[in-house]
Figure (cartoon, rainbow, N blue to C red):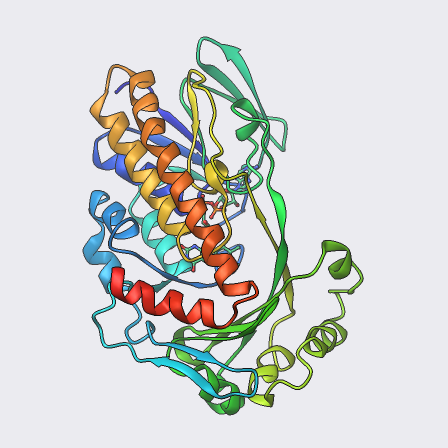
Length: 377
Ligand SMILES: Cc1cc2nc3c(=O)[nH]c(=O)nc-3n(C[C@H](O)[C@H](O)[C@H](O)COP(=O)(O)OP(=O)(O)OC[C@H]3O[C@@H](n4cnc5c(N)ncnc54)[C@H](O)[C@@H]3O)c2cc1C
């Protein structure tokens, strides 16, 4: 293929596309808003699934490197009641098929697998416009521009490329996460560390949850989930960490201290993450010279699939372009034909999982979800 590919966004999806193209000898440029790969903490553990994320890593020729960054023992899962009673405790027996990695390490692995200069850091895209005949002009925040025959929006939830294809915008789903970290937890926060155990812990009642994950070296990553309006969160001054954690903890009044400590004893400032989603079934008519992948195409409620799906999309698009070296439109049409039903099914499942986790049946819906996954995957 002679057309160099212009990718907006160096998340896991965009980087995976660039890597699979590189494996097939196709050059790409990835424009990324962040100034460097270490500019932002790429927090969070991701479990990488056999049926999508791992397939993408194989297509990228990076499976062995991926195995090298897997954190052993982190697939353990616990569900606790608000009083601290253990309702479910599944150890990591090494057979789960969902190995855990740190998002930042996986991203770095992909960056390192690309030729130098492939990712242009500090290139925030401000707008895009069609020039006709499949060509597009990308304008960066500093006023410079680039013209391309093949543009891929891998720029996440608030994609600047998406308006070329669709008028859809993400809507708030009614729940927000508040995120914090507890560092060196076994020594400094032993009660919280014990409650979380070796892997992931969730304590949940309808509309509220305390979730935490053990990352590397005793770091606990807490996501508190609260089903409240955005106006309610706007009433909290997130620049005042102490007042914020106290206000959030108030929502968990009466819960066991080893759980609320995961909020109140955070070592990093609490960060608000309102959860948004695109309409389920989001799709578009074919537009020459442009497509989307990952969250830009199908932002869904988080259920542990989004990063996996973004990488899978990136690999599928890369393979499609490599298979049609002289016909970009055939490649894009084939990619989208499979993308739309795949994304619709995933978004439907994510909405169902989210309702099971945070809806009226909590925590029993969540427990059946965990045990159901065990049986079916
Ligand atoms: C709280 C939470 C927890 C989650 N947990 C999991 C999990 O455990 N497992 C899982 O698989 N998924 C999880 N997800 C979902 C997952 O994070 C996303 O689905 C995934 O990151 C999507 O990848 P992406 O490459 O499409 O987009 P992103 O990861 O969002 O990457 C987009 C990139 O584009 C860049 N960008 C954005 N705008 C511009 C611009 N204008 N110009 C240039 N660059 C731009 C961004 O800086 C970013 O680097 C979670 C999501 C949330 C909110």
